Every structure is written in structure tokens, then in C-alpha cells.
Length: 435
Image 1 (cartoon, rainbow, N blue to C red):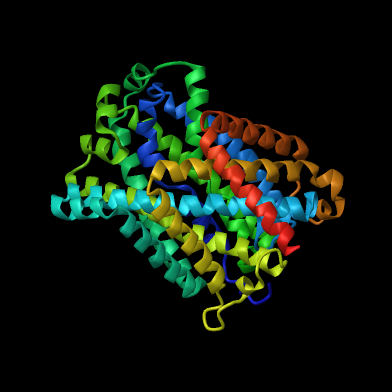
Image 2 (image 1 turned 120 degrees about the vertical axis):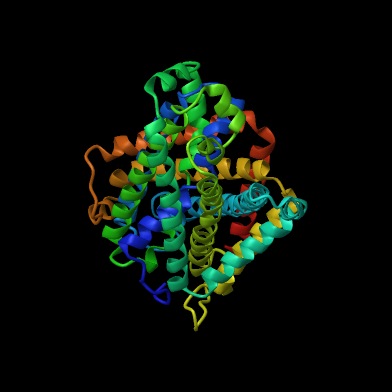
């Protein structure tokens, strides 16, 4: 994969992880979760609990990326430890998860765009967007496809700008809300117990998904063995701190019934911010979702690139644009599949459920791979730049958490599980035909 240029620095890795992970979850799910699991301010502890498997899985990615720093990480990790066939199926299902989350996020971004214009007092523009959500979602995918196509330097500039806007919006909310935070109010808003906290953590875990995207572009990172693990751990730590601060402020500034009535974090900010800042926070929520699109296209195209280079799928996908040094066919393929999912499903939730099951399946395989690494492929483990004490125990914990969440979602969504299984079987057919 020498045709891809190494131009991503530690700063770019942190930005990519941050913008891949932080989406609508923190701005919408923080309050929306009350409609399915009433736990009040215990949402704070649900975010804290969900951070545990996140760190375990992130540590697995960090160690693996310090040893195998190439594009197409999920495919390569599983292939080198569990064999080419398992590697292919893992990458195939991971690709489905990324294509469906691309559709879900573009649809969610379009919805937030409609809400933004409604808040500005432009109901006609809001109504027009609401009536053409799928069209705008497809347009957003095409815009970020072009950003990725035109080269890594443009991608870096766009993501850095979105990162700054996103962090600024989150800090405005936290810093402005802290003077209005009352511990007594936070305590009076507590509902339920540990059962509700655990159930909510399983749902809230979605807000942490995305940190593995950057490992798929290992061939474009400078000194990847050191840069990738450092960037992943720094970004996940920063995200967790900001999530906890936002959840704490949200449930400590007003009674629970008013929080639920407000519906979203930007709406709650109206209690202590002037209207221009409220509008900016709504814009921040839109940026939070839209900023996911570029890293998704960036990382997912590299999975196809790795599969094509290994001749597991048609080899034309390995071609790199001579002018921009980007895998244009692979980028086009993921954009096309994302658009097809938008047109076929047209639903944020339906797309998201497919994503959750597909990504949790991938996490289960990757953490199991990490567990076996030291025992099955000592030479790969030996060259890792990052060594952790009792790493096998960390990996086992991540695997158990991932599998448990996968089983919970699969039992409650059998139709979605059937769809993902059918996609996996199709992948098996493709593998044997290509073989």
C-alpha cells in the first residue's frame, strides 16, 4: 500500500477519533434515554459505566495498532490471528456496519438541519428539508465523498475546523452551565437503580462507537506504531471527560420533568444561555453528526482497499487516483452503498440497529483476536510498541462486554440480526467464489 501517503500526525489522529466518536448521542441521547429507561441523573453513571468497555476495546486497538499499523485494520487483525476466512467475514460485516451508520448519520444530520432552520424562525426552509430528508442525506454523503476524494490535506483541514467548532460548543455548554449546577438538584433527579444504569449503559455505548476508524488508515499515519495508540487513548480520555461533564451539568440545572420536556441538550441550554448561543449549540449538534461522515468514508474505503489489495474482492478497488493520491473507486463504493441504504431504509433508527449489531460483532472478534495475540502469534506481539500488564485480561474483559451487548441487542432485535446474518452469508458466498 505504498501508493498512499503518510501525512497524518498525532493531532490528526486525535481529531479523527474525536470527530468519529462524538455525534448526536451526547446532545440527543443524554435526554432521549429517559423515554425508554427512566433513570434521571443516573445517566451520568451510565456514561461512566459505558466508558469501561470503551477503554478495554480501545486498549486492544491501541496495542494491535502499535504492532500492525496498516490500512484495513479489522481485516488484517482477524486475518493474521484467526485466518483469512474469518478476517474476510469480519471486514465484510464491519463494512455493512459502516455503510449503515453512514446512512443513519446523514439522515440524522438532515433532521438536525431542519430543526436548526426551525429555531431560526424559518419554518418554510425547515419544512422543505423535512419533506426531502433522504435527498439531503444523499447530498451530504456526496459532499463528504468529494472532500475525501480531493486528498488527505483537505480532509485534515475540514476535520480540524469541525473539531474546533465541536469542542468550543461543548465547552460553552459546560462552562456556562456549571455556575447553575446544584448538587441537591442533581441528587433529587436520581431515579431507578443499578439495573436501570446497566440497561442505559448498553444503549449509551453507541455514543462511544467510532474510535477504531483511525486504525484503518495506518498507511497514511506518520510513525503509526507510536502515533495511533497515543492518539486513540488521548482522544477517548478527552471524550469521556466531556461526556461526563455534559451529563452532570444537564441533570443539575433544572428538575427532571423540565429536562425531559426540553428533549435535547441544546434546548436545555436555553435555561442559562442567550438565544444566539442556543442556536450555536444546535449548530454544534449538527456538526457533531456531520463531522462523523468524513472519517466514516475515509476509514471504510480503506477496508475495501485492503480487501482488494489482498484480492479478496475485485482488484480495481485498489486503484489510487494519481492526482489526489486517494482510493477513488473504494471511496465511491462506500458512498454508493451508503446512498442505497438511505434510499432503501430512510430511517435513522433502522440503520442504527444494523450498525450496532455489525460493529459489536466486529469488536467481539477484535478483542478475541487481542486475547489470542500473545499465545498464538508471539512474533507480532513482540514487535508491538505498546505492552500492557495482563493484556490478555484486558482483551478478555473487552470480549465479554462486547459479546454481552451483542447478545442483548440480538435478542431484542431478531429481524435486524437476521439481516446482518444474511449479509454475512452473502459474504461467505463472495469469498468462496473469489477464492
